[in-house]
Every structure is written in structure tokens, then in C-alpha cells.
Amino acid sequence: MFFDIGGGELIGLAVLALILVGPERLPKLASEAASLIRRIQRISQTATQELRENLGPGFENLQPSDLNPKTFIRKQLNDALEVQEEQSLPQPKIDPDVM
Image (cartoon, rainbow, N blue to C red):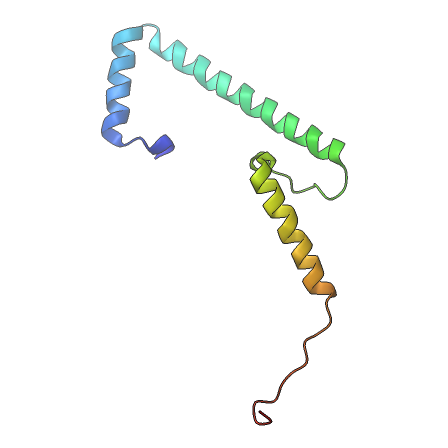
């Protein structure tokens, strides 16, 4: 489940929210939380799109998780190795009977 929360824990959180916020304000609070999450997603998508546009060619498939330095370097090295393998000369085939 989301954030590794089980069904029992989710029900416990719902009951706790009901007690703390109250049944009158809980629906409004839930809709405001959903609205906030949608706004954050839009901001994230816009920022990612602007970053792709500003970095230029070669970064069309950039994901926010790729901005972790280790992930970014690993991805760039893998891409470079793939290009090197494509450009390398074919390996000569060795006949096992000759050996």
C-alpha cells in the first residue's frame, strides 16, 4: 500500500483524524489536502518540463529521480557504454573445432 501502510494502520489514522479534527471539518480538510497534493504535482511536472527544456538535447527522458548524483552518473555511464558497444568492431568468431 501507499508508504507501506496496512489496512489496520489506515483505519487507525482515519479514526485519529476524526477525533482530532471532528466529523464536521473532516470532509473539508480532506478536500483541501487533495487539492494541495494536486497543486504540488502540477508544480513538480512544470519544474521537470522546464528543466528538460533548459538542459537541451540528450535529456528528453529525464526523471526527477535521475537528479540524484549517483543515479545521474550511473545512467550517463550506462548510456556511454551502450554507445561504445554499438560503435565497437564485431568480435571475430572462433571455431571451437580449431582449438
